[in-house]
Length: 384
Image (cartoon, rainbow, N blue to C red):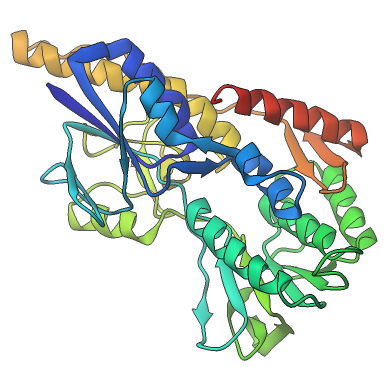
């Protein structure tokens, strides 16, 4: 029996896993391995940070998803893939596969961190961030006082995290009166997004007391400060880094060792069929993968839309494998993923309002938040 191993609980696998199981039935063994049974949905992460949502309201139960769809659930953190032997290496055990899909998300570069404060958290991977943020906030709540907080990055994730921290710094919070600084190496916020939305975001951040720093390239932290190029620094007790995530280092190390093709940004090189350009038994999706034949921004919106294509092409690969064994025929039609030229972006201001962007158009208000919340709740309802 062929074994399909889905490595990581990323957004693409949320969609692909049930489709693969439904299409293959008992003829194929399908397993999903991830470090935590609860996946924080990225679209609701800022709302959880700011206290708008409880964790259970924006977390997807991967174990339940697998149980409902007759998929083997494995809770383990994968730290290596032996592509040559076709085994994923976890902290607990090794997991063989005939076909594998890698959807392990991304990680932020935390820079050079000293032994002393501040606490530095990467916004990704989510599972690690959830644990570290929960521990830090619990300690901060036990000792209420204003604290210097720094967010690194200028994209949508960094902007939303800055809004969340600004909301937590309001009256009545253990972090009331905290200073929030948003530092980015770029000269503007939300590059590649509507300039109207970017101006709305900057004005909204300023109105909420967030201090922007443009042209500040983050290099690390220590001695009570976040450090930037040019020997500049900002006082901080907490630094959250959300400055352009890359594939986890272990993915690149494993691929380099086993001559699996990597793209220039360090992600697994794939074509529009989501298959490795060098290894036919390997598929990849989401932030850890990089397309060689089209430009696809790293975002949950695109990763979710990769799910059905990933499922269809894994099933096609299984059929191809069966045909080769039976008669030597290999021609099986596959699907192509094509990124939409425009996608809707909705940024939570964490105060009951949101900013929207569609192409060059930007807009904001409480109605945008209600729209975003309906979309998020409808998505979560699919997994409850």
